[in-house]
Structure formats: C-alpha cells, structure tokens
Image 1 (cartoon, rainbow, N blue to C red):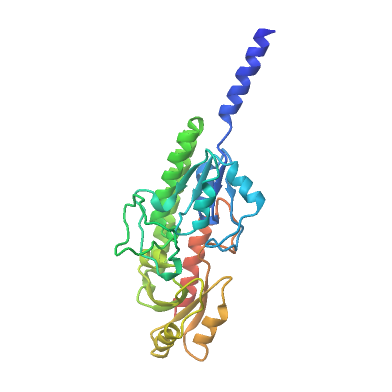
Image 2: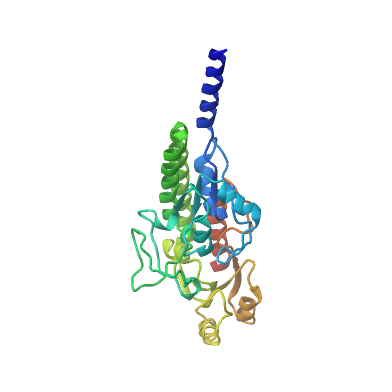
Length: 305
C-alpha cells in the first residue's frame, strides 16, 4: 500500500514538473515569436485580439484571468502598453519579459504619438537608448534584427522556467533565427532598388522597418494618436506631393484611409496600405514572417514604377 502511495506521489510530482509554462504574449507579432520558440512544447496565449488598439486597451475579465494564471508574460513594454504595466502588478508570481529592455535591442526615438504619461523616468537598462529624453518608439518588432535578439531572450527565459524543455526552446529559437535572417536577406534584395523613392505615411509607426531597409520616408501626417492630423502637417505633406517628391502615400488598416486618399487625389502619387502589427493576419507561428513579407510587398507594389 505504501509503495503504491509513494509511486502515485512520485508520478504526480513528475507530471507537475513536466507541465509547460503558461505563457501570455501581448500582441500578435510577439505571440508569434513566442510560439516559434515554444513549438512542440505548448502554445502561448494571445492577450489582445487582432485589431485592438494596444495603447489604450481595456481588458475583459477573461483576459485578466489569463494574466493572473500566467507563469510568464511577454510584452513589448510600457511605451507600447502602459496599462499592461499596471495590470502586471496583480499577476502574483508571474515572470515578465519586456522586450524593449532586452539587452542588444535597437531603440529609436518616438514622436508625440507615444508620449504617454508614465509618471516617472525610464530606468531600464537599454542597450541603445534614444537621447534628449525622448520617448522610445515602441514598434521595435518591425526590425528583424530586434526579433532575432528577442527569439534568443525568449528561449532563455523559458529555459529558466522549464529546464526539462530547455533544449527544445534553444533549438527552436536557433532555427527561427536562421529562418528570419534568410528572410531578411531576401527582403533586402527586393527593396534595395527602391531606396531613393520618396513616400509619406499616415502614422509614424514604421521607422524600424524603413531605417533597417534604408527606405526614403519623407514624413507622416499623424502627429498624435489622440488627435487628427494638424493643418500644418497636412500642408507639408501636400507640398511634398505637389513637388513630385512622393511616389506613394501609405494609409493604415483600421485608420482613416480617406485622409491619404484625398492627399493623392489628382496627383501621380499612388495610394498604399500598411499593417504595422499584422492586424489582418491570422495569429500563430507563421504570423511574424507573414507580417514582414506583407510589409515588404506593400512597399514594393506602391513604390515600383
């Protein structure tokens, strides 16, 4: 009897140890990177539904429960989702990985659109911190270099939580990183002929992508997430288009596409459409690759003669 009881306890402890960490990721691109690392072990939970505004999202009770039950929360950082920082204080023992603070992450200055009031200064140990006290542009997942660094950081975090599957996490991260580097090389070749072609954007959310691929962004019409484009900014963009410097004006999914359509009406400039977080793409393992390829195709289609 005692032997049977001992075996039952032992088997129960083994099963408990073998259970994979419960992981929650904030947005679909981050969820995709985590899913690639966890492939074959478990599937992370996506916190924000596709198309939701990450800057001011209001969680439902079911999403609060996901956070409360998580072993690890992987999120972009408070410059993207300041409300999530507050929510994480109520998650008990859950670990969290803020990707903007991962060592080696390239950061760029943001504009007023992400100047959230956090109530204190940044104290995070960034590898590359914008100067002059400017807020960080949080759309850092659009840099494949950052994504490659994050894959390894996610694997390290998971390996520490789940040593039994550490080898799988590290192997998956290495393979995902190799695939990402290959895709990045392909996109570089596709976009290289378009580096001098001028374009304007609805929203300053693409700097990591356009700088990485050395594309010629001339400006954006949206100065703030909370306010419509200013008359002065619209006048600047209109003058650029009238001068023939703009080949394409990019609208953004789930935003006011008519603004950009009006700007190019009656001019040689074309109208394009970008999706910075892949809101129109299905979430999952393949999401991040589809996001970068979709961005590159949108630029190629609109900037090509």
